[in-house]
Image 1 (cartoon, rainbow, N blue to C red):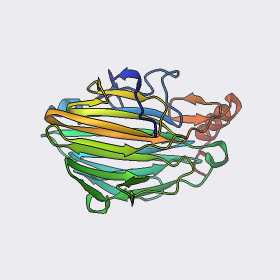
Image 2 (spheres, rainbow, N blue to C red):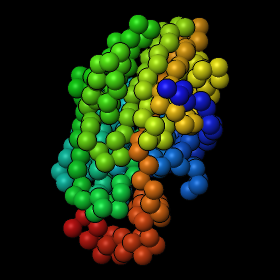
Image 3 (tube, rainbow, N blue to C red):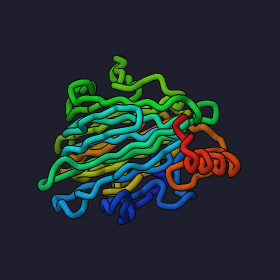
Length: 281
């Protein structure tokens, strides 16, 4: 048994996306700042409607998946397949762009707090041109694991705790992603398995916490070193953090905005497909 330690910290950089939505981007702020199989991680959160009201009007994607986790707020998803989903407090939108999807994500509130995360999960070459798909996961469909010092919402993957396996709302992906929202009470502790085969990170978004003897940085991708488990302890005010891990794909990545393929030629073909109206054909 080898405990994972902190290998690297990637602070969230203030930027904007969509039609001016203010975000903090850790993974993906530069092409070199990725963690295979994850391409990007954005945190959005504001009580000022001006920071989010314009939303993300209709735009295309190809070659990866997006996972949007809403902590507070209300956003509407619509796409060219006819899917329409309300993303509310505690819900998750899991979208597979595959060969191509055109969708929008628009706030359905004019005041109050909107807060959450969007993660981009790469697809291997063999799956990049798969059919597009969408899944709207309600809060009550996300398993909750009660701990002695807190609780875990298991969005994706499997965690074995005290010998008992727990399956998340999403399983079966080739990159075997683990996505867990961990809530720890003041001074609460948790030890969780993280497969040795996986790259992983912790994203602290509320409170204070430490990994072993090292403090985690707030609003940053705290990248994990090698090992097979993590031990996290919350500070005096408790902590809320994400555990995100996945099996690396190990393939070349060529990205052009919302398109992620393996070669420049595939990107050029994607641009032609989009221009000619064949992206989603």
